[in-house]
Length: 547
Image: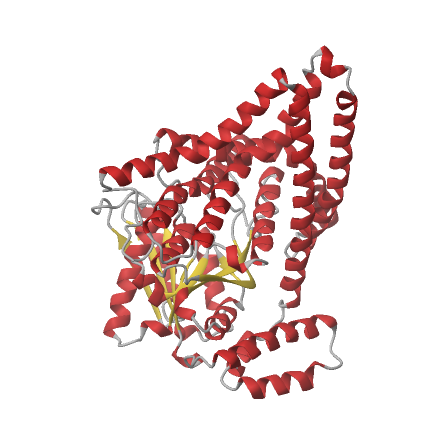
C-alpha cells in the first residue's frame, strides 16, 4: 500500500486527522491526572475506590513484568557463551544438526541444556519452513554510525568493538556518518579513527551529510538515511544482492558484544521471512556506569529492564535505539524517516505498514552497551537526563502517523490495528501518568477527605490497603535490585567494588522521585508539546567519560 510516513505535506482532511490524533495522548494524560485531583476534593470516596483498583492493577502488572524480567535475564545468561557461528553453519543441514545436538546435550549443565533446547526449537521450525538461506560467506553487514558532536573518546571504543567481532571482519562495511555542521574537531577525529581501522573492515567510509536538504529536519534519521543511500550505491556497483545484506544502525557511543555480528547472522539466516524482519539486541548502559550519578544509573538500568521484558513478547516488540534489519527491507520502505526524532521505532512502524502487517522484530539475547548520561555537574546531568527522556518520549509522534495509516488500509486485520493502537496510546499515557498517580495523587483522597468520608470505613481502610499493596510491591523491587547487580559489567572498578555495589542497590530507593521527575514529567512534557503543535527537533545527548 502507498502511504507517506510523515506529518508534512498532507491534504486538508489528512491534516485534520493528524492534528486530532496528535492532541489525543496529551489530552488523555492530562484528563486522567486532572480528573483524579478533582475527584479527590469533590468525591473522595469514589477517588479512593479508583485508587485502590488502580493500585491492585499496578501490583498485578508489576508481578507479571518482574516474572518475565527474570525469565528474560536467565535467557540472556543462558546464551552468554553460545557459539552463534557454529549454529548458523548448522542451518545448512538442520536434521543432521538436530541429531548431533541431541547426542551432545547429555551430561551438560542446565545452561547448555536450555540453550540447546532453544536451538533445537529453531532448527525444527527452520526445517519445517524449508526456506533457503544464503551462505554465511555471502553475508555483508552494513553498519552505520551517525556522528554529530561526539569526539574520538566516544566513537573509537565502538569501532574497536566491531574490530573484535568473532564474525569475519572483511564482511563488515562500516560507514561513519558525520554531519556537515559538526565541529571541525569532530570531523578530524572521525577521519583519524577511519584511518586507523580502514584496513580492518571490508569497507570503511566517512560519509558527510549535507545540511538543509529538502524535506529533511535536523534529526538523526536524515543522517543515517543519507549514509544508507551511499551504501546502497556501493553495493549495487559491486553487484552484491541486497537480500544478503544486513543493516545495523548504532549510536556513536554503542559498544557491541564480540558475538553481536555472529548472533545477528544466525538469527537472520534462521528467520524464514528474513527480509521482512528487524533484529533487536538488549541495550545496557555500562560504558561509563561507575562514573555517572546514581539517578542516571537507575533510570538507564530501568530502560534495560524494560527491553528485557519486551523481548519476551516478540509479537509486540518494537525496535529501540541500536538495532539491525534486512537491507532489502530498509530500501523497500524508503529508509529511516528524515523528519522524525524517533527514527528507531518509526522505522519499525514504517516497515510494518509497508508490508501490510507482515513484519516482525526478532529479539536477540546479546547486548549492546551505551553511555549513561553524565555531564560536568550534577545539575547539568539532571537537565541532560530530562532532555534525553523527553526525546525518548517524543516517540509519541508515531501515534498519529501509525493510526492514520491504519485508517488508510484494510490489508492489516482490524483486530491487529485496534490492538496495536490501544497498546501505542496506552503505553504513552501510562508513561506520563502512572508515576504521578502512585507517588502523589493516590494519597490525596485520604489527605483532603470531607467529614462524611472521614467517618467511613474507606477512610481508614484505603491507606492501609494501599500500604499493603506497596509492601507487596517491595518484593518486586528487591528482585529488581538483585538483577541490576547481576547485570553489571563483570569487570569491576579496582577501588571498593563491594561498596559501589551497595551504593547502587541503595540508589533504587530513589525510584519514586526519579520516576516522577525524570520519566513521567518528561513524557507529559513531550505529549503536551505535541498536543500544542510545538514540534521538537533532535537533541544529541552529551557524552562524557573519564576512562
